[in-house]
Length: 137
Image 1 (tube, one colour):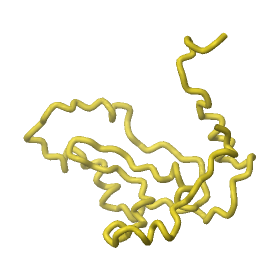
Image 2 (spheres, rainbow, N blue to C red):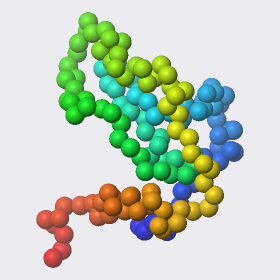
Image 3 (cartoon, rainbow, N blue to C red):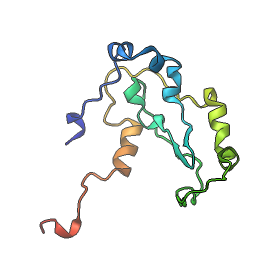
């Protein structure tokens, strides 16, 4: 697939309006770059990587400030763990979610080939995924 074969289709107002009210309430948080919690698991919601899905200009995303050990979880049960204390460093983001909503100008048309985001994207993307050992010589 080439870039010109992929068509970004931002969420249309028809699709958004067809959602139940409870889904649309506070919909700015759809673009909040914050950790999401489920007991012992903390993952980051990174809408800044898909701004075109919201009909906005895509900028080069920057890394989230997780330390190198974040994904080295011990998933065995810890029944007496106070998760609020355990995740205190990440709760700040969620408790101030309005400060972490990603905004950008509205995207009009397509990105140009020389757009800084596309230049960056082509530089960091693996265009062919597979086992190089089994590829034909």
